[in-house]
Length: 419
Image (cartoon, rainbow, N blue to C red; front, side):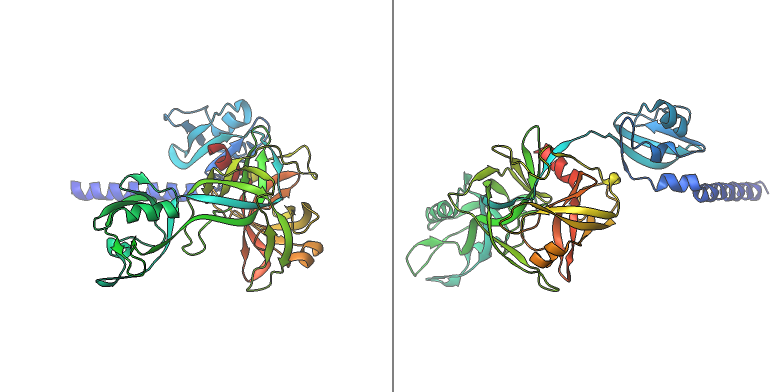
């Protein structure tokens, strides 16, 4: 009997707990809290409203577990004494949301829009293909037999750093008749392989049977630079190898003033392209220090002013942006940087960086007539809304060149600062 009574009591308590949780989840205030972004940006005057408006039996605890104030609304509505850090919002003592509070700082940047050439040398050499060579034992591929793949970055041979394609060939030839240890980077891992070169019957030179690339060049757009330190961001996405699709690991490089010589119009199913050129006489604008998923970064040699915004603009935080009118700054002809109308048609809530933070549509008749919409070479073109830098173009919609993805400017600026 006692066991049956205990079971009934446990079931009753469980039902009560479920009912309490159900009612809590139905409470509009609970839903409001759950819908809050994980990252919350605040300053002395703005950014508090989304938290301070929450009423009810909510409390806030810091990362040590200590409660901050008697209630959430009192803490934020009156004292506003939060500092940067991790917090937990609780309802009736039950954790319902974890948030990371960032104190919003006003960062001024100079928007770009300038067409630039990118000249880069890779760290080590990138293996772009494997092939066979004619040997006394028949056609073989020592590189493939060892386990090397296209997309690997060959960084050293027997602990000697590979400085380029010619240097790699010299190091390989030095191990005729014997094996050497090849150290490569693959998918973020460092791996080693034992490779035995074979003598090519065509010229008697020891080879391993692979094609490599040590440099690349292309056209993109300068997105912005931070005015107090000349740290810049460009392109909005990574520079990848045309054959392997792998992000290139950069040893050194420069961004260079580019001249636009023509535009191939974009159309459905066939993205267009800005055709630009630069050479040894073109003005060097800055170095390239890093090639990330969110663009290339480095330091300018001197300021590159934007005549449309000579004093620069504030950086926009993602929560400040709205769907609606915006501008795209870009260079598509000899007239240089111009502002064209566009609209933000989709904003994605993001707690971590991603190259697809928003979707824009080009609406400016002049730009549509010149390019057909967004074309290759416009990657990195800054997007402005309400006088603030909102983001930068990253990808065009293949089936609709009027539309494209953009990365939030905040993610690019954070990469800039990290460099």
